Amino acid sequence: MSLLSGPIKNALERGESIDQIKQSFLNASYSQEDIQTAINEINEWQRLQSSVPAKPEKATSGYKVLPSINANAKKENYWRYMLLGIICLLILIGAVVLGLYWNKLF
Image (cartoon, rainbow, N blue to C red):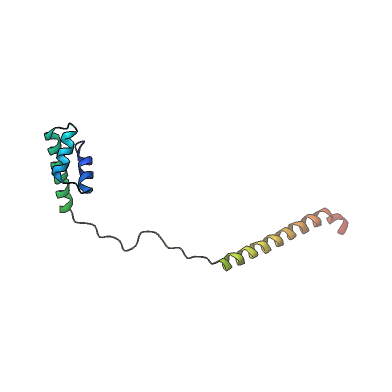
């Protein structure tokens, strides 16, 4: 594609007419031949795009919807983990104390 194809395409998307675009680029010292080549390339590209069948769009956006966890479930899990941690800590402390005084107890 020529260097002018992008700017000309942008001008067309903004709603400018071909005549306005041509005059604008002529005023900017571009040659008539370069301008016409770019316009022909855009026309050819649009023709090719219209001949290709469009892919059907998916019904979903592609993102998975994750189930939300309400605040009560989060609080419930928090207290379960706290209780489990405390129990493990007590077992560990009991094992250390038992290990230190094993000879004196038995």
